[in-house]
Amino acid sequence: MNVRTGAVVGGLLLAAAIAGVATSQQPTAPPNAATQVGLTPSREEAADLARAQQDPLTTRFHRQLEQDKGLAGLGAQVAAATAPVLGPPDVGLLHAATFYNGDRHYMLVIEDAGRVIEIYGSAKAFQSPVAGAGVQAAPAVARPAAAGRLAAARVQDPTDRAQAQARARGLSDIRPEKTEYGVDVAFRRFGALYNVSFICETQGAGCTEADAIAFAAGLVLLNGGGA
Amino acid sequence: MRRLAAVAALMSLTACSPSGCSQPTPEKGGPPPANGPVAETPLETPPTAPTPVDWPHEAGGALHPGSGSGASDPTLWAAGMRFPIEQAPAYANSQVYGYGGFAAPGPGGQCDDRNYSYPWRDNFCETRSWTNGMCPAGKGHQGQDIRPATCEKKAHWAVAAESGRITSIGSYTVTLLGDSGRIYRYLHLDMAGVNALFPTPASRNVERGQHIGKVSADFGGNATTIHLHFEIKAPVASGGGGAVTFVPTYSSLVDSYGRLLNGAA
Image (cartoon, rainbow over the protein chains, first blue to last red):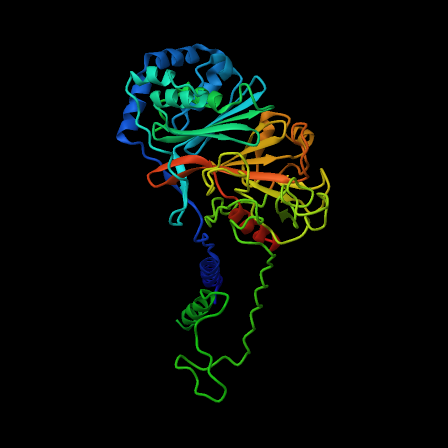
């Protein structure tokens, strides 16, 4: 066997060995592992997103962000996000914010008045292969008409009132949760899933479910929707 | 041509799995196999795979008796995650219903040997006033409490469950946003040590398995036992809807601990 033939044979043997090993050692995902799925906005959610993109107040806020040199870095990160980014319409808070961009998800973190506020949004979700597993649907509540905002203001309980006002602003599936460290509120908007966490030094004023829901309801779209 | 035929024969042998090729071995004294005579050199017996190490652990959802109704969902919500304490052994059991806890079964402190022993028990959904949509009662413990190997503060490392960023450090909370989009929270670590590890924003990118702090009992000035409270929050799609919610951690912890015990953390 000459050198060239030997080299060919050696290469073929190596390739065959690798193929054999690779075939026998391919890891398989456990059968009950959750998988990721993209979230698709409903027609109503897509229409809400289009309205939000054209909202004059939002447009004016975007212009303010563009003109603020201190927010140029944040602006570029938000523009690159692949999920609709919601953030507070408060330039002061945004100056103190840190933005984390991920695959179809993001987190905006703000430290404010003894609280850490985490605003998380995702255009994808985990789905269980197990029948019946997963989160229970929040009770369905009809979105009130424009006059419903006035009705919402008349609700006495602060948490219920905040929920009614949030629904009037377009949030759905609103789920407030007291936590070991503060309060969370999860909701759906523009076809994406969101969670706002208030991590508080102390429970009480500024760290109630009503506070978190009101904060979530006041968030505005900071990017074009992340499509 | 004879050389090429020999090469082809060698290739067919290497493409077989390590457990051997599916060629019949003739019984002693029997006829040779149809595809040729058996090689004279005795085949090596492949080493048997080591028996996987297991440890006593109750099923998911089987909470300490009298401590509430657990979530029996067997879904692996964080498949492939790293067990969040660096080294075994570790003991997943109740802080409240264990010895030294508020609802302890009898006399004994938190360092009682019975707390530092198997079996594991799930405590996600254990009775609490906090909302938890994954629990049968609609409320309950939002994570899993885990004791480290010994009853000592600041002696055992907690590690990143997956690669990502430490997005916030509170007075007793550390939030890790995983690259997958899962949110992991670690409570009661030694927070001075955590802040020393991550002094700047640039330092907060972490790799799976990286140290993030030592298990302790920090609770913003309140008293608690030495343990890691570990929780996972994730966007979950369900029946056309969905929510970002606390997910049952026990199955993922069992899966990851088993890999840790078997050297495949």
